Image (tube, rainbow, N blue to C red; front, side, top):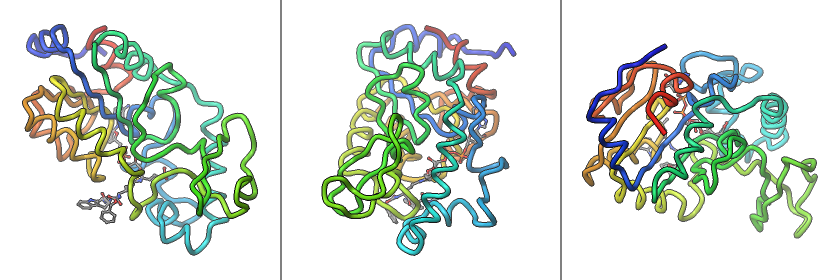
Length: 241
Ligand code: BJW
């Protein structure tokens, strides 16, 4: 579907030097990853709402149940591929002198599309980490360890669950980039989970042009300079290279 892109956005895109892109689950929807909100079949897992099963409280109460949920998720993700939005965003990293991709997604599809140095606010399902020493374990090529190979304690998904803190320094890095950018894209997020949803306002307050891409309006739509209504896989490739 052809979308309307303003002359102002085209000019900003042509002239931008520092660009920040914030993505959410919607950017992966056309790859077959269910979003968290607005329907889909992972909003409830075995009768447990996702914000309960994906919570720090559940992790403390029932770590095996949390692993079962994440093992299922990795199983689904293993066969999924990036879509045209992931690929176009990956091309943008070589288009602008200073480019930062900040994602709330834990699916690894941006990296699979070729994006480098992705700022992962909420972690990644393909990593486990020790609950005590925090040592990380890559599960993309090897199985989940039963215990930490370094200290023997239990491991958990390296994902930021509800009620947990973001990894130290990650949000601060993203916030600094938001404060410095001149063009900010907000793609496929419902913009209700903080602190991630606060990044576009930081960019806007610092003078950036903010553009949202989403089939639905969000709480951020009214602060954006441009709202493009549509699916990321259709809209993002039309914005330009
Ligand atoms: C398309 C599309 C297509 C569809 N193309 N688009 C300030 C105020 C109030 C509360 C808080 C606050 N600050 C912090 C909080 C608490 C909480 C929070 O924000 N709660 C809100 C829900 C109210 N935040 C936290 O707990 C965070 N921690 C924290 O702040 O620590 C400090 C602290 C602790 C305790 C108290 C206070 C402060 C941590 C948040 C971690 C989020 N984790 C999750 C789960 C990850 C694990 C897992 O994968 O299971 O991360 S929650 C879930 O939501 C996931 C996502 O990353 C995140 C955001 O969702 P996203 O990406 O926006 O997806 P959806 O599904 O919501 O939206 C999809 C969008 O796509 C929709 O708009 C569609 O229209 C669109 N779409 N198809 C483009 N084809």
